[in-house]
Image 1 (cartoon, helix red, strand yellow):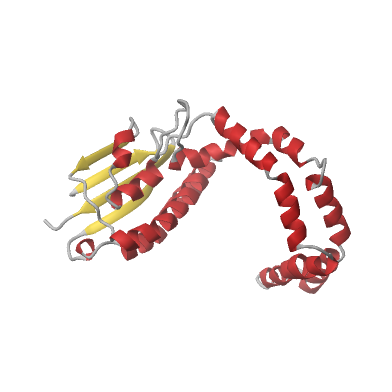
Image 2 (image 1 turned 120 degrees about the horizontal axis):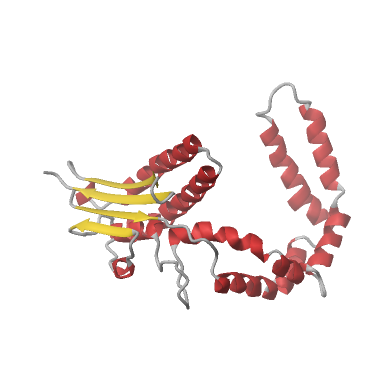
Length: 261
């Protein structure tokens, strides 16, 4: 082992108030733009039928190809297609009521803001740049692991009790390919980490572990594309692994750079 990083994705108890308020303010300010964009894309009933109704029905029919024989597929497809095709008046009324002048969108955003608490699952794994002491790291382990593989030393300055780095740190990714694949690794690790936490909270340990195992396989395939030529060589091995930490009750990220003996 040449170097290794371990980080616990510590999930905070609540979302920082400033994050929630920023979410409210941002969405409320977008009401008019959302309304105009919707009407620009769907200006009339023909556009609705083509871009929403028929498009949805086509994909729904593809999905129904996999259902069992006990379902009356033709009737189900017909019902969905007919109902959607004539739904434009209801859709337009709903859009006007929600996003038009004096629409209820702004009030609903404020009243439903507590549902945005779920964002803490994401911030707990990726981090957050706070303007106050919120308890979130600037970078959290899912992102830290990727940045360290690219040779970025900035996260080290923000380590806390959840982060450890041993050995002699070095970049393992190709300068160009590493930058291009980093978003894919981060996105997949975020999804798996959040879903694993959900599964654990539902007492579904086997599902939780399967989610992480499957994610590790995909991430490893992506990572191999982005390694530099040295670390693709014989005897070298670079891994980015998600696992469950029973002590903290959260996902752990482990990045290991192994050299030939």
